[in-house]
Picture: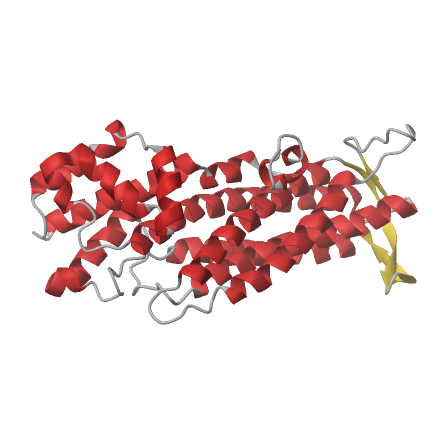
Length: 349
């Protein structure tokens, strides 16, 4: 039994998403943070900050390192972040060269950059799924677009429209959100690299050159550190909420259309008490996921309030909210694709 529906033993079959969820596993997080450290060492060696031999030893860590998760669990309860004990474990493997690992960086640099690397993968997955959803909507347009529907405003019959009219209201926002997502990927998610207090003081005059190399190695955008300026987090969370919101609108419409007989949806929805029923389960869950993400947005905006150069409280709040929003968005895009592909009828002849 888990406290989250997203990785629950059976509820995750409805509300979870294994592909997106994998980006928030311990293994994925540890791998992304170590990728930051390897790239940092390479960038610093190229600029003469640390010896080339040290960068070579650090580059070999991913193949040989296995984290002591029990030690990390104990340490984070003391330190509030995982990096201090991870650095200790990494340095223990590197022996003398370990003193060059994590040079000039701080915990937040490794954790935030690791998050951006994983969110890049999440956004790419969502981009592919939105393409599939758009394709499914276009297929429905070809099959049923000319059929009639009663347009409804404020839940009351209004005037006759076509299925195409309603499909257009579904498709337009999805196209716009995909364009925003693709723009975010094209611009590049931001590297986080600021050192102890955002000034990269240990790197002196080489700071900007190391950061430029580091961003290039990780294929992230070279932007000033954002330790206490968290707009990128709310921007990504907002995109998640907008995607689930438009899919929730589709789900709500389909549930109502199934009720009035203008949509026939295949793919399950059995009732234990009424075998004749075909409940619009996936449509309903799209509504649920939209409402879930809408609620989380307020929490992300609370996490914008970082005191001074870094906040432990606000930062920790992000860890609690953003991964669940990402998985909810994954589940919505998965279910959205499935339900659109299972539609057997829309409108009336």
